[in-house]
Amino acid sequence: MRASLAGAALALMLVAAFLAGRYVTTPEAAAPAPLPPQTAAPAPLPPGPASLEPEESRTIAVFRAARDSVVAITTSARVVDPFTRRAGERPLGSGSGFLWDEAGHVVTNDHVISEASGATVQLADGRSLQARVVGRAPSHDLAVLRIAAEDLPGPLPRPEPGQGALEVGQSVLAIGNPFGLDWTLTTGIVSALDRDLPGDRGRTIRGLIQTDAAINPGNSGGPLLDARGRLVGVNTAIFSPSGASAGIGFAVPVSTVARVVPQLIETGRYSPPSLGLGFDARINAAVNRQGLAGALVLDVAPGSEAARKGIVPARVARGRLLPGDVVVALDGMAVTGLDDLLGLIDRRRPGESVTLTLSRNGRSREVTLELLAGR
Image (spheres, rainbow, N blue to C red):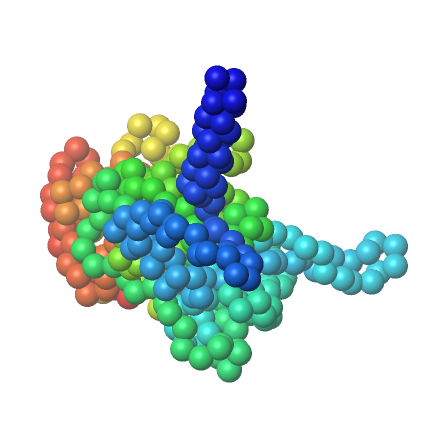
């Protein structure tokens, strides 16, 4: 009886050992060892892990297609030793970017290179190349660098601009180099649209995409893609007390990128359309604090369309500023300050007509003007 029980126990142990060896799986199985000579082949292995879900396969395909167009950017600042008077370069920071065209232009954030005297672009093949600044647009936190076109390893994939409006809940993917960890993919959704974020020098960056895809220091300047791999934005900032991702990241929308980047490449700066009117941010902020809502017109060019349509600027009399026309709306959208007006104009193009609602001495009227090319 004891022998039978011992035999049964041994059999159960052998079965358990067999099952354990048969069903243990690892994320990446090693190649099976060769069978010893003159032994019977083992029973066929069970099927491997289930095939990837369609969403996973698509995400992997998007990352593989876009990865080689994303670059890592490191910056340095020129410093002079106060004792030896010798100049040198010290590391300043890092960020991300992506190739814009075959001419070697690289799009990134302005804050990535704003204080730098030099920048190095690292390609996905491991090479590090010196880059020069082509143009900057601090008002939109965008900048363009350039590396030598002959250094590009042949035609590279570039994120194509997305078409149509984004929707809250739409899937997005961010690629960049957070904390120096190169070519990192994070995923999420569009959490909100048309967000505003305070920028440098008190200028608000408007119309941003909010996403819960993790965007950490170093992600700045990398592309935000939709589920098809199309460019929908440029990752720019996070909102976090700790400085690390807290599920609230922001990106400059592709509509702004497509408007600003070509101008930076062509002229080195971005000039939004103009109404042909003069304004001053400091004076306007002062009159807004005193209760006058809107954008105060300070100058009207003689002979201009605005002058012909009777727009009157403010004037100074006996040491006092006497308001003339104040812009309180553009195409029916309220203007409470100069920043509102500039933000609305920035979304238009030269040659478009806009309708201004003007207020003067308690009376309102509407005037239609054609937007001029910025200077």
